[in-house]
Amino acid sequence: MFNKIKKINVLDRNKINYAELDKELKVELAILGGLDIFTSAHIIGVANNTQKICEAMDLDYETTKQCMLSAYLHDVGKIKIPSAILQKQERLTEEEYEIMKMHTIYGYEIVMGYDQFKYLAPIVRGHHENLDGSGYPDGLTDKEITEETKLIKIADIYDALTQKRQYKEGFAKSEAVEIILEDIRKGKTGAKYLYFLLISVIKELQETYNGDVTEYQKTKQDIETLKELDKIYKQIYDRGYTSSLSKKLDRYELAPGYDMTTNSNLLSRNISKLESLEKKLAEEKSEIEKLTWQSKEAYKLIKRREWNVKIFGKNAIW
Ligand SMILES: [Fe+2]
Ligand SMILES: [Fe+2]
Image 1: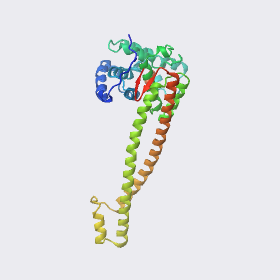
Image 2: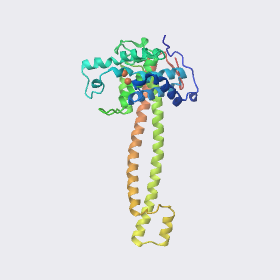
Image 3: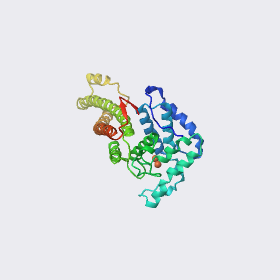
């Protein structure tokens, strides 16, 4: 009844157009109509993370589609949870938590009501299960939990931990990963999908970092130019306009009305921009280093616990 991801074919990365796939999914999911699953930032976050994992694993089209649909549907049962509980800012009481847990069963029931999505119902039901049987609603263990469910679970926890909510600040990426690694060490969660998520997250962060380095260099150059201009303006201020100073100014193709004050404002703005970029770059660099270390840790944990997984280069086959 339910297809497990058994063998993953090595695919050409460019074969799947993820944006197109996403559009297609939304058309298929439109049948849910009033359930309004696309407006929640969490759902979109989980779908994005799911895509990242699928992409890093080079999963085939059908599996990717199945995982993406599950990401969109995984919390659909929450529409039956009273909003007083759903939006509560303080910690839930035990009783409220029990009600909250029901979203897995409600979601299962909703999804079972649609012939075309029925096959995803076990993923929706199982996305809070743990490998050691400590999860809910059925207390399933490792072998009873499908690979897609394990994948969605990582995408789900990572989003829940990193995203800012109205009542909490999100954790930094590496802090969130550390929390997930703790669960993995306890045997609650598998490391495989975290590893692939990390590959994607690191790649993305590296791109941001490279972009910021370019921005940093450009700002540095701008500051040099603004300093040169500042010097010229000071000379003009001291000695008045001379033809050689006017010529020097002409080289800069300044906008009409540009003057000494504009220049010094721009200079101080760029200096503080440089400072904040410097800080940002240092943070990004340290995040990349931490995440890289954590991805190595996740890889070690895969080899130790999920011994049946073979990783060949960038592609996974199991
Ligand atoms: Fe959930
Ligand atoms: Fe969720």
